[in-house]
Image (tube, rainbow, N blue to C red; front, side, top):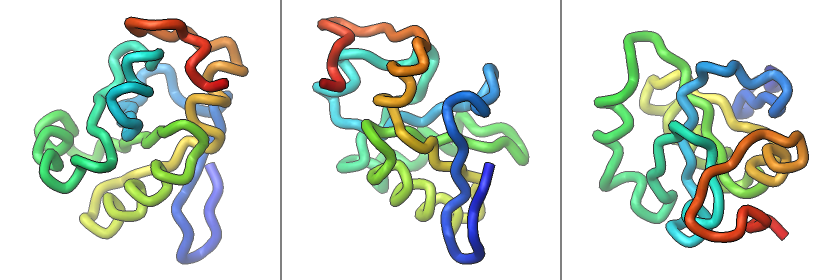
Length: 115
């Protein structure tokens, strides 16, 4: 994990713990196309209204890893979470990197959603 002062901490897919709480902030169509099993799905467009869903799932002092397609939206949500006092890390490369690393996907449509 790395971050410069004032920046959001981030990690790459290879360093993501297998038991990580993964928050996927992509929109519904992206989620349906393929996502990480066990991830919590709260689209960025609905995040502030559904914030409580995350806090209910978070354990004390638990870190949340935020993912989107490539890392832009997730970095914004991770920054918001950090301002709320939640230990948040952006997943660098997002679900594009997830798929490239050969990590498993579950979904309702073709998992080649990132192309």
